[in-house]
Amino acid sequence: MPNSVNRRFNLPPVWAVSSGKGGVGKSVIALGMAHMLSFAGRRVLLVDTDLGLGSQHILTNSVPEVTVENLLAGECALADVLVKVGKNLDLLPAASGLSESQIKYNPENNNLKLALSGLHQDYDLVIFDTAAGISSRTESFTSLADEFMVVVTPELASLADGYAVLKNAAQNTSIQQFVLVVNMVQSGQEGENTAEKFSRMADTFLGLELKYSLWLPYDQSLRSILMRQSLLREDGQSCIFLKHMQNALMGIFEDSPASEKNKPEVKEDKINSDLMLSSQAHKSDKRNVKKYAGEPGNRVTNPSRIVSRNDSL
Image (tube, rainbow, N blue to C red; front, side, top):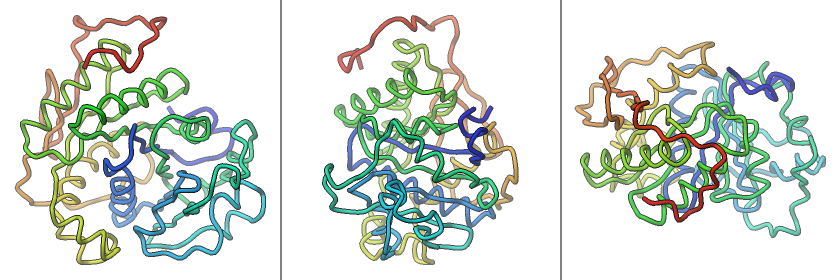
């Protein structure tokens, strides 16, 4: 079911892509998702919500005159900030280099919801690329999300911080659907083991069954593509990372309760991919996407328990 706040403010389905720490590929995944869905026919709005330290305008080779910070401060209208970065794809860029004192945004006000209200008329989907970590500003954005994606890498610090972000979203928002992406894995075995470990931890300590858990491979060619700011151009289409992501995520979006309308039609990529969703019990569908299914008998659910970053990994 769509977030009740979104229904009130006439927002389309909203996905929040988040992480516990920087450098895990969160913004690249958010942009890749937006590009993939827009190319498939969805009208997508990508919102850079990392206020003061935005990067999406850099990744998309855009030079915005005003940013989302100006919009939230009431200094301009939504149409003034929108940057068209591709067919069916618009960007709300964030500024880069603003200090906390320069950002005139109070998360306790409704100006974020009001600024974005009515987007359902122009977009089929909104993707928030959030700031890494936990803050009241980030929470004000994620509270609007219907679906929450947490991005981690196999490194222990990334897993611990990603778990903290997931816990905060589960306890302090009304989000019902959670997705895990383990990025930059060196092998299928590493990806599957990491995804299973994280999913089991969320199930045991939070009573939270991740709707999907998946992994994406490390791709050496991705760095040069990003350096050329060409992820959205033709030379980015051969990137193995993006092909893996498309194979996995299209199934997730088509199965999303928040994304029932205007499902895109995408020809299945023929790449010989071993990308799978990690699971204790799973069954592959035609997209080679495996849905996570927790084992209810092994679940320990105690919503009143306060879990810290020291919960066992």
